[in-house]
Amino acid sequence: MTPAESVLEKLCDHFDDELERQENMLALCIAQGEAARAHDLEFLEAKTAAMMALQQEAIDAEAERLSLVCQVVDAYDLPVEKQTLSDLIRIAPEPWKRRLGEFQTKMREVIESVRKVSQENAGLMRRSQRVVNDALNTVMRFNPAGGGRYDASGHAEPVFAARAAFVDHRG
Image (cartoon, rainbow, N blue to C red):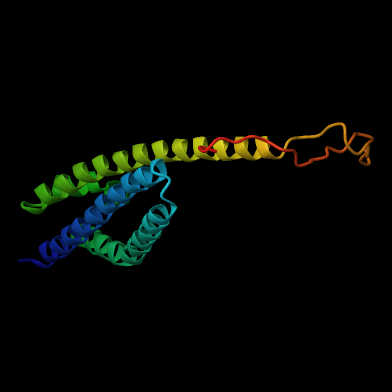
């Protein structure tokens, strides 16, 4: 194996690890959504902590990835405008060409899935927050008749007063 092929092998192994991290991130995103739907805050917090650990792993692995990419760029004398994964795939010999191509395809799919699930989870969280806010507003009603105080601009200051409110067992 030539030195350039050795670096390609290391880069492919590194990419395999990154793909696995991103697949785990997708699984955690899905689990977060399930936990939110089940109102399981403990499970949600555990999945969030696991996601943060994966993100730190990715950050820690970046230095190695950058070093390997620099070595590949040097080994294949790639000009600046050709230092992309797609360009590397075009010039890489087999079996690395196939491995890099598979990585690129799978990574795009996983990243798109993570984006989609994250957006769904964000929507779910916003809806949950609105429900909580609506419940709090029901319990703590705005009382415009109270007080009669004015702010510096001459507008009446809102006064919040706790009033009795009926809330069913679902909140």
